[in-house]
Image (cartoon, rainbow, N blue to C red):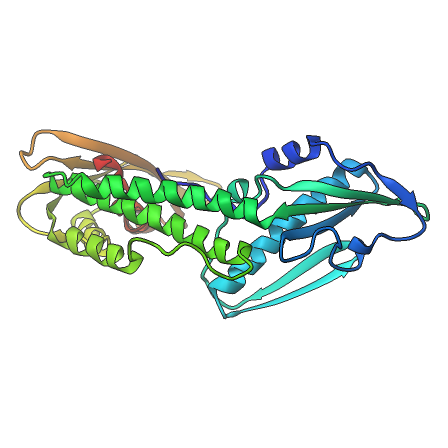
Length: 336
């Protein structure tokens, strides 16, 4: 099962933590030590912590939890790439992080898993300006246990799909692709684990992700497929389909499964001195017997130009973009 991993703190987590019983708000002219440094009761080797402030107590708690999520995110990104400048400073009791990223690599976090157990440990209100402050903490051991549990689940699912060894080539490739997705998710959690664990360790993977990726690529190249265009209202779609199939990793031939594409376009119309044309790109996967449609998908097309003669090429270009972006996942989705 593909997991959606988000970098923002989920509202459900914020709502849950905000409803938890927390320490009562104290008010005095003396700032608590956790606004200026490491909390005495929640040392860094046992806890991750962050603060938040607002004119309203509930918003201060929500911001503290959000800042805790951001701190984890930044630290994981730092582990994952050395091509990123990170600066952190504290103002008004809230830690602010700025990043100057020089890499296209992204690291995503499953924050609902990581932040289970995060809580508001302390609250304080300034008697000078009535600003509310909150301290959010996360027990490293508890967070680590949550991550280990999730990583074990991903490993169990990976083992299951790889042990099926289905005879159908396409189904076997779909299983291998699912294993790749599961282990990529696990790799992200492993990077997070290294941040949570003060020793900088984690749980070594049972599978080499690079080897799984290469294995998937090899199986795709060996899958017998052929390409066919059933309807072409813009011209040149056979070349477009073959190019997209090759870019997806397939090795188009003269036998096997059929990847069938169609472009159905309506007559162009003029509006506001521009010519417009709409159409539909359809894609089907047909079994080797040439009779059974395994799956089908369609995408709307819409292009414009100052001259109607420009529209077929632009429609074809849009179909090419969609196929090169969506073909592989669509085929694997049909198999899954």
